[in-house]
Amino acid sequence: MTARALSVLLLLSLALAGCGDHSMSQQNRYGTFSKAALFKDGTEAQPLPQGVVAQGDLDRLQQISKPPAVDMALLSRGRERYDIYCSPCHGFTGHGDGMIVQRGFPAPPSYHSARLRSADAQHFFDVITHGYGAMYSYAARVEPRDRWAIVAYIRALQQSQRTDVADVPELRSKLP
Image 1 (cartoon, rainbow, N blue to C red):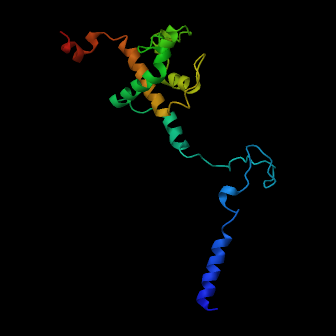
Image 2 (image 1 turned 180 degrees about the vertical axis):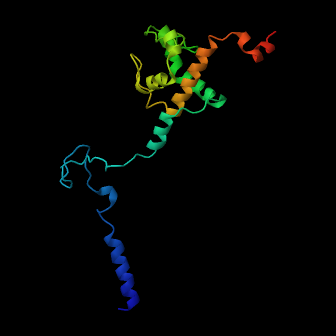
Image 3 (image 1 turned 60 degrees about the horizontal axis):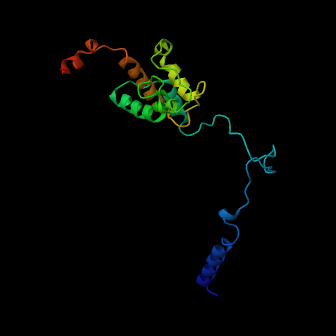
């Protein structure tokens, strides 16, 4: 045989050796929490190495710890998110008279009560994050920046119910 024929035969045999039941899709796998002799502790569920940070965690932690500056874009986003997640119980004006309440469920407290008007913004953020009373956590549904946007919108709702037209000269000049 010539060297060329040998090299073709060698390449063909290598290519065929890769075929068969050794593909990644046909490998054995461990089920969740099953025993695995491969690891020292005998389980397939291994703890993360020390110092590992999940992708996006540092950004998420920064968003949680520092509220964004309030501007019209944030308030608009807050209103949108509030209407979706909060208004079914709290109502569109924050008085605790949403559609769920009108159907017989317990009413949440009004955002316009003295207690909640004096609560700091972190309180509202924490309630959205962890839940409170009958309200469950929205941490998995609402991103941290959107939680802050909702808090800003709640503050705008609170302010809107306690502001006189005389306090807003721009609006007063537009009224008939």
